[in-house]
Image 1 (cartoon, rainbow, N blue to C red):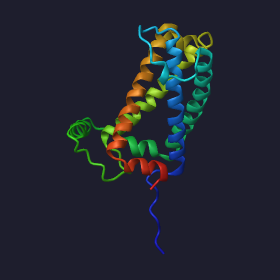
Image 2: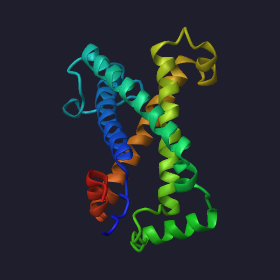
Image 3: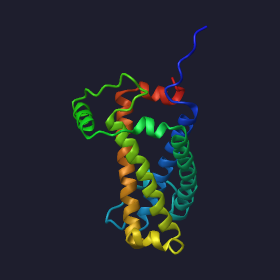
Image 4: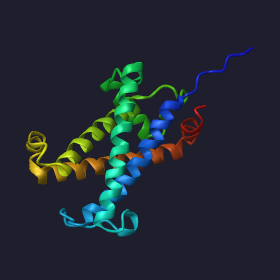
Length: 198
């Protein structure tokens, strides 16, 4: 009797990943519609890539996805910390190894032989997106309940500052998603691992 190898990505991780992906896409599209209501940076997002139809509808979509991302994200972090996966998969970081991996990635020679092992570029990108998610949630709280979070509001340079922090943190998340999709297209078996686990 042969023992099967453990999955590359366990079921709990795949579930969290896809729920986060859905929540992120809804937050992006509805957030762009909310942004268009003021266009405070002087440009608008094309309406055909936004969600909600009007400001009120976009806010409803945004709040629904906010709760999904917030709860799912907290559970994801809790399971990663409790299981030791966060420390094992994402640390230690090395500036020298990061530079070497970035140069290899730019040359198209970054190895992907072992899908269970994250290179330094992946480690830094995933840690960045976790931190970016925290910034999005905190700045979103100020936008949602500004009066109830006065200290947080002041730390984010007031309501207007929080609005800009929220927008640019979302822009950074959009950048991460785009790069992530390109990398999946370049190494398509990673999508199979994230769907089937093996």
